[in-house]
Image 1 (cartoon, rainbow, N blue to C red):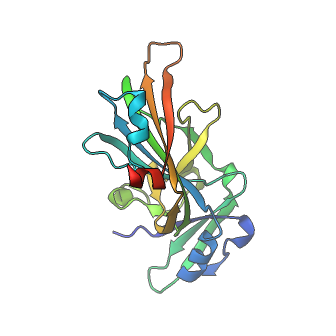
Image 2 (image 1 turned 180 degrees about the vertical axis):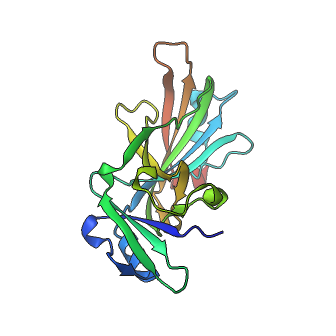
Length: 221
């Protein structure tokens, strides 16, 4: 099923009002977030800090993957949200709402593992172009078709040992909004970190070691 609502994150002045076609929404979204980071998490049984320089630049490890995500830099301070409904009887879309993303409801969430242990993280910056977002296909049946601004939520999380929260995505009706990637260009470097989680300690998350690996050095290894 195709949910009738589409979401566009871009500067407020660029969000179409009234009637719009698909090309209008795509053009607006292309002026939205252009930076992102890819994040993968792995269990780290048997790994040591000395292993990090030899790990692959592209983040490909077999068998231990527990998280694989691309997090666009939505930056609610700079962008606005446009919500559009697909016409049921003809081509095109109707604008239902436009408002600063900073005015949306906020919710904190866990992004790193919630259980104790030792883990590897792989992080790489990307330049990307997004298409308009929609509720994830596997969750569309659970989301009402009638629009309600109160159902839109910006998710925030602490990543690693960051002191401030990072916007890690948006949901509608409690279901994630997915933003298809029109294109992406990865930076030629990535950072591997070895960290541990101990919920009984005064500091629950400890970064044991980090290592930046480069495309050239990885290819020669």
